[in-house]
Image (cartoon, rainbow, N blue to C red; front, top):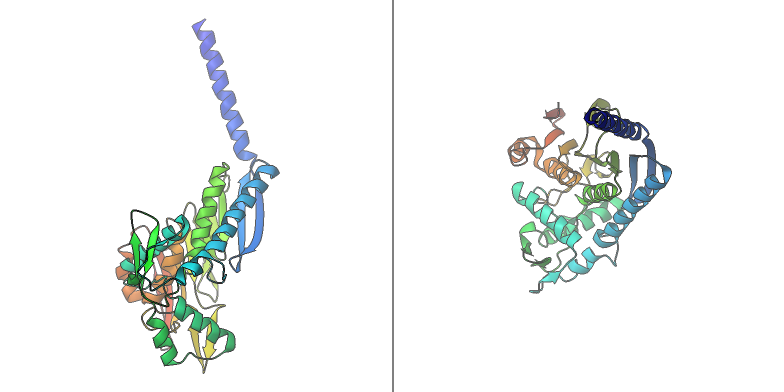
Amino acid sequence: MIIGQLKCRISLLLSLSCLLALNCFSQSRYTFERGLMGSPFKIILYAPNDSLANLAAESAFKRIEDLNASLSDYRDDSEINHISAQSGSENWLSVSKDLFDILSISDDISRKTDGAFDATLGPIVQEWRRATRKGYLPEKKVISEALAKTGYKNIHFDKNSTRIRLLKKGMRLDIGGLGKGFAADEAVKVLKQFGITSAMIDAGGKLALMDPPPGEDGWKIVISTGRDSIQTITYSNVGIATSGPTYRYLEYEGKKYSHIVDPKTGIGLLFHLRTTVISPNATEADALATAFSVSGIKKGKKYLNKFPDNKVWLVEQKDGKEQSWNTIQ
């Protein structure tokens, strides 16, 4: 009798194992793409059927759309612009959890990088957007006046509630330096709610990687210096971001100014070629790709000690000489 029960249990366990194995190998690959936050957003996921894949992807896109409505400084009706318009008052301003969280992350990275990353650069970023669009170099006086309205230390946080205070009149928040990474991480959370474990979100070049495709060691990602594809890396469950002036820059009188602005000078970067960062999540990777681009190699090596779970590949060029710092290899 006991032997018979054991045989039944073993048979049941074997059957369950076979079902789990079949379910693993029955996962199909699905790709979805949509224009969001001014960039193409792509979701590649593995799911057992069309219905689940479509529902999970649509829900993830909806989450990103909601974030964009709240956090985009391009939209006049966004929460972030509404809050910026109230800068300079002594009042504590109640903000959504999303805005509070992303500003808190930004503040932490700003402090650890001595301000190489700064979410208060809205005034100076606005000037460079106009200059790039019309093809002129912003005047020193204009840059100076815009910089006077910035500074991450001028955001105060009420840790006991989702409230902030913007001390300087004319401050304008801009979370473009980590917004796409944050959106990708939030999309990951949505996919997990639907039982999706193997997926990649490409948020305009900011990647959030979940478990690898079935039967693979990881997601294969090609990284480059901006001129040639250099190598393919294989990773999973990380965030990867690359920054560089490949597409967005101002060329004026023979100089190429990056869309990434140095928070201390208010000038677009001149020597930066490419930065790739691999982090535990896409939000951190996105922000640090900007911070290390601004800091350059020498200071970047010091800052990396404060982010021990990160890897960096930074390429810059000065006086015709190219320098590279690579901890990814």
